[in-house]
Amino acid sequence: MPKSITRTYSRFSRTAVTLLGGLIRAARKERKLTAQEVANRAGISRGLLQRIEKGDLKCEIGAVFEVATIVGVKLFDADETTLATHLRHTDEKLALLPKSIRKSTKVIDDDF
Amino acid sequence: MPKSITRTYSRFSRTAVTLLGGLIRAARKERKLTAQEVANRAGISRGLLQRIEKGDLKCEIGAVFEVATIVGVKLFDADETTLATHLRHTDEKLALLPKSIRKSTKVIDDDF
DNA sequence: GCTGTTTGATCCATATGTAGAGCGTAAGGT
DNA sequence: ACCTTACGCTCTACATATGGATCAAACAGC
Image (cartoon, rainbow over all chains, first blue to last red; front, side):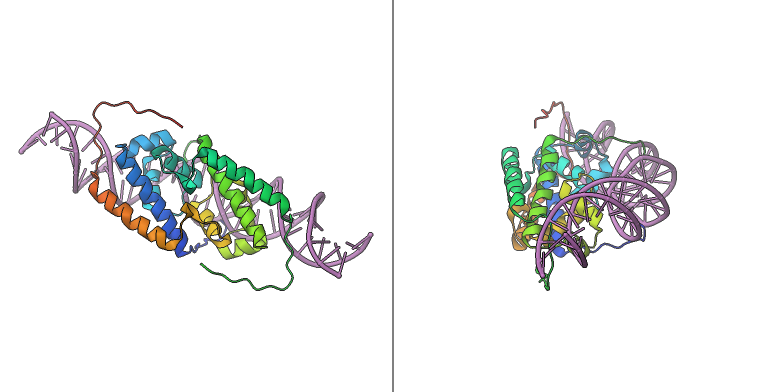
């Protein structure tokens, strides 16, 4: 990032990541797994795992999802099969939509 | 990462992130939003948004969630209120679990 | 058809996320 | 109570993700 950009996150995003981290931590402890152990399996450092569990917004999503998977936190409340289905469905959806978006004279409402 | 570490991700994680990216793209187009526009609102670059929609595993989770929120992709299939509830519940759970995990002599099965 | 816009891809520079090690503290098992 | 180990936190160095600019191709609207 060229200029030190202070990114701003919506409260929802922050809450969601924090929650995910909490779920991960809870799941890890329930499974009686050591932080080091999970980190090893995920191929990340213990420090990173700590940040993930703490809800740090600036971690690789890959690392976070990997950890979530390892400790058994299901994303999208779905299992792998469902994921694949979603994927296919998404593709179909995209096929129907225009590939490029054209603006005319709009004002869009930011709501969340 | 000190030494060029080639991180390895489970197929599940890769699928999940790809799916999320797809959902985001679909949602964005459905809402007739320009990539540039969403990027601006999320406070990220258009390039990063592209990578997110493509399912790049190495993006900040904060940026991904932010974009997801903006285009209306709900995480955890839950709204903000539910998230907060989950958060509280997670905390309670954690309070009951031991703060530290003690290993004895176990072998854990890696399965996924 | 033409025109202006969106997109996808690439390259570069730099801020920064991550690994690693090290520390003190707290906590679990015996 | 002891002793071991998991934890939380810090610091440093380095690989790299990100922002910004640019270009060509694809597309929507007229």
